[in-house]
Image: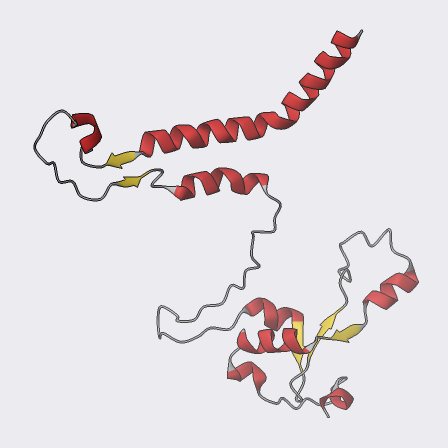
Length: 178
C-alpha cells in the first residue's frame, strides 16, 4: 500500500518537474556544445619540465549564446515579459515624417481642451449583445474621459493635423470643448 502511494507521488512529482528537467538538460547540452575553452596549457601539468611556460590569463567562454536559454524559458513564464505595442511610425519611408496611428483616430475623439473621449469597453453591437440587457447596452453607449497618461500617449500617437480645433454645426460635444 505504501509503495503504491509512493509511486503515485513520484509520478505526480515527475510530471510537474519534467518540463524543468528537459529545459535544464537542453540548456546544459547547448552550453556544452557552444563551449569554447580558450586557454593556454597551464604549468601545473608540466611541473617536471624546468623551462618556464608563460601563458596569457585563462579565459573561458562558456555558453556564448545566452539567448538560446532565454528563448526556451520565455514560453514557460507568464505573459509578463510581453510589452504592449504601439504601432507608431517615427519615420515614414516616403517623406521621412512621423505617421498617425489610425486606430486612435477611429476609436477616440480629441476635445479642444486636449482631453480625449472614448466609449466604454464592450459597447460593440456584435459582442454578445443578445446576452446584455437594455440597461447595460445603454450604459455601455456612454463616453468616458481618458486620464492624463492616456491623453499624453494618444497625443504622441497623432500628428498636429488631428489636434487642431474643428467646429461643426450641431456638435454634440460642444459643451465639453470648453
